[in-house]
Image (cartoon, rainbow, N blue to C red):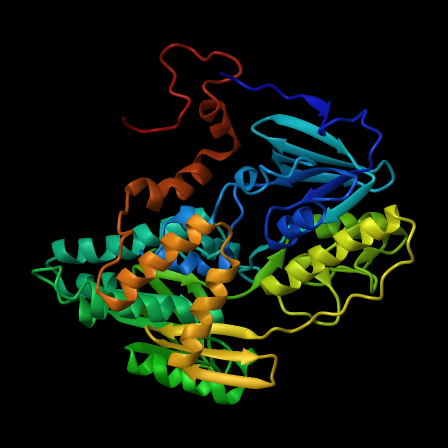
Length: 476
């Protein structure tokens, strides 16, 4: 089957006469906005770049073999299957026309135009390499299922290759893992790799000792978990050190390649760390849609790609366009799930009130429910909006309860709880499968370039000569 470029209107029923609400993004902001409109007299089109809703805070557990991708990424279509006024559409939004009130999306050469009466933009953010995008080839981020599966393959694969190596320097390189970024994602990732090497894998190999693996957490900042405050940050640093993580602060990454990473310390000294596996957990960049909206509305866009919004989360001069989550710049709000969830619900309520002829609601106010990060098994830190702070086992139990609450679907909650029991009470990890496709798939697609779509859709749009291989593979 092949696809051809098309341009067609989309929607459940464009003749229904009901207002058309288009939601861009199937993350926390987009999904919670759609669910909040379940009883509203509107037709919803939710456009997702992927066909699943990703519970991003648990990506590191997919990467380290605790959970499967299905447990943290249910199909969006399945989540909304009982919501009769919602249609889910797969596609990447490439253009928004504020004057014409249309959204244009594309997937595998098929272009679709979606008219709207109300628009909610919740496209989220991707990994930022602070202008050094070339680092991504050797240091994957932690923003998608593809990222997590690639890292799972790289992490478990490093131990397998070390078992085969005969040169001690090569073994040391393979058993060195560098995590860049000492925020919650980096801390959780480093802690789990250390636990993996010192607990889960310690008896699984014959030639190498997995417990000798180096796990290094790097950050140019002077503290671990700076948003949690000095006290909790220092406790997290000590707990990481006790678990086998080398915390190196004030260290700025200057170069990354296949064999290692170069850093410059605060005193100006340059050094190199030989490491096969590098993980980037530092910085985010909002969707490019922020720039498109800024050019048309005149709203300011900051260096991270976030667009300035009105106190009611709308664009200046465009009261039917709502921007929520990581894409909006308002009151220096953090890029956490709760901001997106509360913003999505606020935008949905604004739409229902306008349709009902009611007065606008009060300006958006974020209710800070706190921040959490796991350090290791049975140990976490919790900051409840600066009011209460916890650490240790109590904080870890709180972390478990909250994350179970926000995982979408009873089945996913149940299986996640079972896998946590296996991993935290025992030594096992139920998701240790790693394939070459996971490790090299992203790089192979980037090497093939845009032409790879020809083979992915079942064949080129124009048949090539019989002896031409359009996949770009050097061998079968």
